[in-house]
Amino acid sequence: MSKIREAFAKGKAFIAFITCGDPDLETTVSVVKEAVKNGADLIELGIPFSDPTAEGPVIQGANLRALTGGVTTDKIFDMVVELRKEVSVPMVFMTYANVVFSYGMDRFVQRCAEIGMDGLILPDLPYEEKEEFAPTCRKYGIDLISLIAPTSEGRIAMIAKEAEGFLYIVSSLGVTGSRSQITTDLSSMVKLVRDNTDIPCAIGFGISTPEQAEQMRAVADGVIVGSAIVKIIAEHGRDAAPYVGEYVKSMV
Image (cartoon, rainbow, N blue to C red):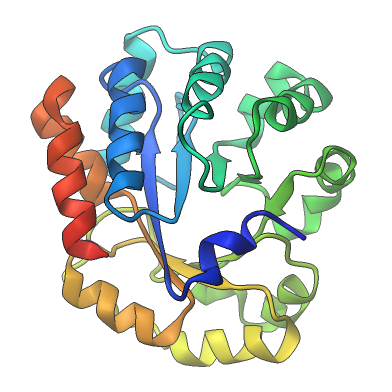
């Protein structure tokens, strides 16, 4: 069974997204530990990329700071080895197909498995091209996590049937970032998913307040928060960990 299921086993999951290396990897380590200590059930680690097309200004800024600071995929792998000494919750990487290709797909996925990662999210990988990655991920036991967007309509059933780990439901069109309100008809999207798979689904993109989290929790199995956490890190820099811990606690 996928270890990712554990994140959803105790009820609704809180998933925290953190950009690796913003402002440095030591901070990333302390932020992850604080998030987990305060109730995060799963951690999404963003591997920075120079052209993160799905991201809004907050996460773009974090990518830029991390890359300027000299973070590399190998340094992130080493950081995960450190993290895994203390952190046992499931962790997944979120990055772009290019990052994996330039590293070498087999080498990348094998390394993910060796260091104890559980899944991989590639927001720019269209469902139709999933088979380029899926066999390698299966070979090493890494869940390739699919995204469903409001535009996926006719493909939702298809994507759900083949889903692994958890399904990432994108709450709104456009890029990541806090939204004042989320207007997508998520319950009908989730119903379609439910009709086709028993894999848990989590909603992300735009969730930043406990009220929004509560709304989403009513619909899905979990809530993903990224920009709101990355914003706290941008504001507090190397001292961000306790602030992120407080925020996670308030959301959980």
